[in-house]
Image (cartoon, rainbow, N blue to C red; front, side):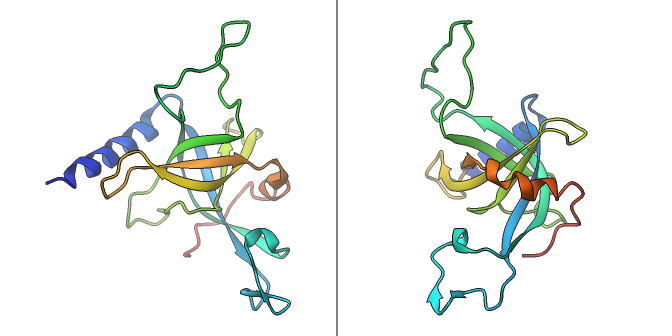
Length: 172
């Protein structure tokens, strides 16, 4: 009985993310190491994916992202023209939902270090890459309702510009 509450929250969050007027279309990419063997670096264990040079970004699916506040009750700083700018900090929080339903082709599960590309214009001329750096929950009942903490990754624009027409999602 108690697990029905977070299940309903997740279902509602998915509908809100896809139908909200402030939702943004996204494409998700997962970093893959192309060097073999990919678990060592000169005989030493690799500390993280940031240590790698030979990587590619595989398209894992399309979806929608909805920017969220860190804390809904927190007040925002206003600037002189009475506007509250979003994104004054270095971290951004998003609800991310794939277009495909679970079990369908194109469905993905967002993981840490995935790259999310926000497509702000339909023609793809304005895109902003973000990297998922952490995952947090807003309730402590499984199945958890999660939101993703992301950092801007302007250094990945070189990789994103080569991904204008991604192939079909690849199986992880």
